[in-house]
Length: 552
Image (cartoon, rainbow, N blue to C red; front, side, top):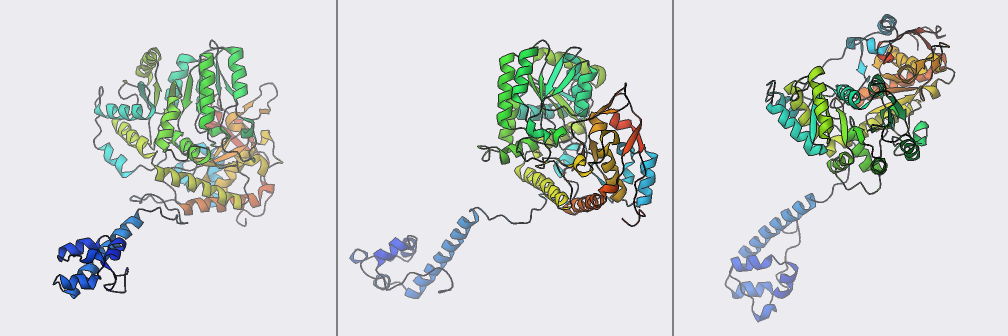
């Protein structure tokens, strides 16, 4: 209607002026066969009347043209950048639900006693919110579930393998793709071939199974984290970096004969899930090339690392996660990969390399311990799910939500009074048990004590990343050789828990923190010779002096 939308051309104004202001008016003039006289100096009304057209009909056509122009303007506005909303919601819908079982504090206390205060030994049915690990615990997408139905379970030459191989090659650029049932199988194969006595494997920091496989070969793992990574409270964007000066000194002193490869862990799990910068990786590549040493990646959480590069590293904010990932892989000679993390799969992994001879030897070991080279210990269903997961894990909406939700979880824990590894990394929030429980020493296993308290208080299962995991018992003294840090990792499974679940965890942790001064330590009862944190048994060193447990 006239007056309710954009202004209509004034019929009393000269036609030449109106054509400048309303270029589309010429189309209406042509439709009604109106011709401009006097070079357009006449008014629109005069031009219409001289052409014998009906002015009311002409003006109705003008109104219709105005409406079309308004629609076009709205379409242009729809293409403009939108102002962000404060509410960050999950970029997916939930189509399947699983009920959670409740337990009482008395139930959980009895369970801790039964399993020797080792949360790995707990039945999952006794856990309410399970943050033990983000490995193999992701919720699969509709596309992944759909892919299971096309799986080809042929023993040799499965179509599923070739789809999986194509996806890995397209992402990483590596020539040889060797599937394994999970990441530690790839580590075992690799270090069985390149490790051995008197060999050294430098890293920004080796995590538990990687270190175990290095040492099982007879080699020695050497951690070279940057100084910033040793201070849990000090914010730094890339605390996962390797110390370049220390690496150069080691490479120059030991040489190619003693160092079969340098391994960079992305993200650096042992120092708090902290990312490695692209600049640091480029410098490591240059040092390795100078000394003739291959560079390998432990790429289990490569996608999260790439997103944090995009968010934190100057000059990277306009690049896609996939473009950053391709550059990251292009800097390496090979990688070991657990598909159970950023691969969004419940099982699977691979070893990928450029070297033909190394790949041939790896396939020989694969056949002995894993399976035929076109399935390698994986069902074809897992090959299909992992192939889809490698695409989905680099979707910007998914990564943005993933990193923001973990950061928000960290903020809730911080408000609840928990000291954290700062800044919060990609896949987990790490609680600093040494700062929360300063009166407990390494022989008291403070991080394990805190992890058990979280479970006892609210059914939350995390994992100790401290002296139980990375320390050892000195056989001469019986005392603990401590780890660098005493951390509790609360690893967030991908696409599983909502914001309310994580807020509940923060509330549980806050209640434990309120009574931290009454939390007692643990002593070791028995320990396996390797990866002792998986099977060890502990007991309370002394009864904590608390009120009735049903009060606090």
